[in-house]
Image (tube, rainbow, N blue to C red; front, side):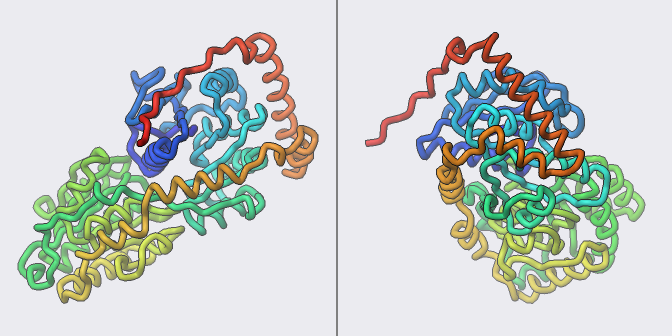
Length: 432
């Protein structure tokens, strides 16, 4: 597994990689994770069940993404692939430079390659255009592609101009027992008429996560219903904007900002509320929605990206990505709870049946098994495939591929494969 985003940074991609790796280990596979260093966390670390993580010291450019170099990571990646007897290179996240490079170099070395996309991106702005070109280059090197939703699949097929038959849809999941509802939490409409109604928000406070919408919603909802309180967990550049909104409308006693929280604390925050609010502008899946529903919260969110695929309609109230629409949907959700028209006590059991990491790992394993080495393209056919990627981009891709093969030959000459020590795998407990 290769990605720029991993522990100790919290997030959906990070926990997807961790839990998927743990379940694959439980199924008898050996899994290694490669990411960049985080502060003083460098070198090799071991996590639960012998999950080995390589924190390699690369320059971080922006939001924990390494500086894209195309070739600079090849020597160390090759060494790890050979040392760990790697068969499959699985890259994650479209904006992870390290994942793109690992999949490309792994393909050059003749290894099976898989790429999972977790996000949705556009086509018009400069960043998206450049990112889509890089994605197109990677997807023309990869054997299989996994997306976390059908909307994400449509997005990546268009962005990467790839064959939809190579793309599988495998969602995220949650460990439902880690998000059990509070048995003492109020779920009946009679209590809600007397008690405070708490709206939970747990999100990175960035524009794409709807932080601006959240800042506009808070005073309107507080004005419309005097029983509403907000509990907001998260950090980011829009944290100050929300603080200023609270001070401007004098809502200090009704809105609590607690900053970023660790993932193991998310459940403890969620069970304090009645409604989970997720005003995002774009989302490929939205694992936090499943976590909230598992905790017994009614979910109010925007109808964008792959979110409509995540939960059934009885758990979710949708809104357009605008302040007025979100306010109206949130107030409607409060009214439904007050009128006792939604029984959130059953949400946890329903989520447990819908999302399970063991099932996700088995489906991912099926994708791995569908790749046959004999079906991999020869170098000549790979060049032809790159040539179809565009007048200028195609020639650049061909040049990169030829240079990569040359670097591989040079590395093999100076550092032959048989001279690299092979690791001793983590001992497995015998099953009786």
